[in-house]
Image 1 (cartoon, each protein chain N blue to C red):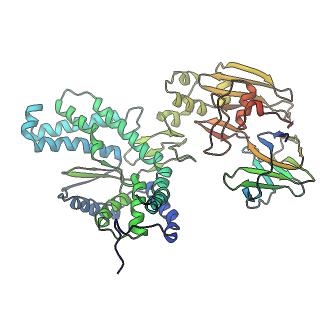
Image 2: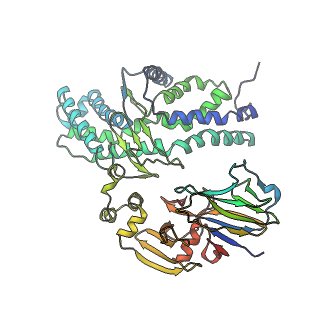
Amino acid sequence: MKTTIVRQGDVLLRQIAPPPPDALETPPADPRGLVLAEGETSGHHHAIFGNGAKLMHYRQTGQRVVVVADSGAEMRVVGGGSGGVDRHTPISLSPGHYEVIIQQAYHAGMARRVED
Amino acid sequence: MKKPYGPDNRYVLTEEHRAQLPEWRDKWIAIALRTEPQTEDDRKKVRTAMRGMYRAAKLTPPKHEVFASSPISAAIAAGVASGVWWCRDNPKEAEKLFGPVDESRLMSALRVACALAVRAGMGERVSVPAATNAATYAATYAATNAATRDATYAATRAATDAATRDATDAATRDATNDPLATFFLRCVGMSYRMRNGGNQWAGWCSYLSFFARVAKLGLPQFRAWRHYESAAIHGGPRYVHKRFWIVSDFPQTIGRDEQNRPHCLTGPQLSWRDGWKTYYVHGVRVPAWVVENPERITVASIEAEQNAEIRRVMVERYGIQRYVRDAQFDVLDTDKDPLGQPRRLLRRGDVVVVELTNSTVDADGTRRVYHVPCEPELRPMPRMPGGEWGAPQTLTALNAVASTYSMRGEDYRLAVET
């Protein structure tokens, strides 16, 4: 399987083989939609838009997985525009499973989320 | 009649008791993290508990019952007091070692020793067998002692121990011409032998008390142990001697980070009401000024700091962007990202950062340049908290960026980037 990796700012999606169905569970719904990450400083957030798209996580580790249905989906930045200029353009996602990886920085001997 | 628990009737953790583990753990975590001062009721209970422990050990409770404002003051007072009492109880040996020792000389040496110990401590570094049995042990131990320790140990006990050790060690090294005062200072250095952690040893108490209070094993030993438990609930670290006991109050502030490491960026991480305090940033003990006066941090002061951990904290306080700008970093590697924007891998000492340029243009027509601190060997970062770090990589800009996304450079092939 060809691994597709896409990146939108500090959010990276890496296509993976479909995990066993019982390995994933659905977290409580976020009224804003399928939010992957929130900007620490500018109020924007990265979210998934698409019919049938789901944001799930592994029961064991909590690591998040985006499930994109046959009709595809888009990763977009919502809010926090700077002077009318979008921080990042949308990215189209083909059907499949993608693990969500957020950029981290090294601080005090540990990995911490990059402030975006 | 219910058969008493013992070697031939072992307790097995029940589901009902298991369900109470989190509440029990949290109760003792709160005890370990208490910052409200001791009340008169606390002191009354501590007196009862201390007397009960002496009696349980078949010792006569001492007349001298002392409450101190901090464990460090308690350590100094206990060390000096133990020396004074040794001289009083062993006058002939004291005279052989120190010459004539009367009360006046004892008190004079005591004052010198206390003053030196406090001064030393106020230095820069211290601002003052069957499977069921095993399973039950494992389940309760992890849920009580281990959990309480994890949540509180570093920020309370370890930090206090370090501050007390520094203060008492410094006192031992301090010089005085009076051999009697020197002896007292040595006693301060050995005061840890009289020490018990009180509420700071809550982990162990949470484990033992679970069997007394929740499992209700009814063992005869609990009648004596309840005093130990009460002293841990109502008092901080204590110093116990046949002639006296000294129990410390609780701290005024306790700072922790999300990993329960001692941490506070706005003041002392631990402080007590008598002025002793200690400073930590994400588990690193730092001089007070690094926290209280960050404006004093300069490139020169960063470079002059010998301790690598403190130096790293100073860089973070100074600001990584500003540090990269003000200091002359070595450029280890340069390349361009897939969108043609320049990337540089920079290093100065043990600080490694990757300099990146936004692919999108800001409203003013410029592109933002930002710096992301990397693990010095570019080990891919763990994907989840507590996860494993990857293996070291060659120091290139590509590997640096990949490491910040928990990947190796050879796997970091972006199809789309915005």
